[in-house]
Length: 310
Image 1: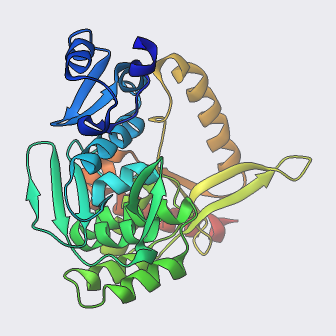
Image 2 (image 1 turned 180 degrees about the vertical axis):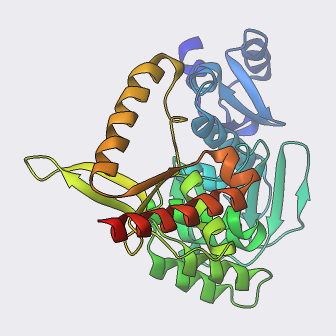
């Protein structure tokens, strides 16, 4: 019995086929964990999500939905974004956010319930949680966060398989809602080839500073079997300039030595092809994008001088 209780999914206390005494005993022994008032989950299932933010949030969302009286509720906004695996700026959400079609909105320190229009085609299930679809989640976040933050979400959504047409349809469904004009601008600018939030905010910075838009994820060299061997983050073919937006930040300390050597060799090979390489970090593009833009423009000039010399 204890093992079965420890594996119990989020369940309303009233629906448990256990006596009050058995429930109190399981809570004391931590075989059961109270997710919300009146909603319990087995300790084994709770603990297995301890090191997985996405799985833990799914568990909390299930508990919040089970505790919500009235109309069915669906994970939305940051909660849905996390469940879908979308990139976002900032920390993962701690508060569970839910939509429902009717009933008064309410919130506490752990859950916020909002009331809004929610067509059936805008909802799905992800990780066992009733949620807004990837397209609806993307449009909603793009409506409320900054343009830069919306692009991070939308780039990620496209990369993970959400279709641009799906985004356009949802934006049309929400045509009279606050922020939809910004969401449409985000959708138009989004590009699923951007491989990380750093690349997404770099793209926005280039737009804001009026740099020519680069091509993304361009393969410059292939191996003997035709597989990509050198693919660069950004490429300005008209200028012969390559941009690398991640530097060495993607490597752990244990790998730094080998990574430094490999990156040096890789950059030397790119330069041997006749291209000028510009690198920048997250801090560079976030805090001093003008400086990054100046280096790229200088690289345009250097590449032009090399061509004239050649």
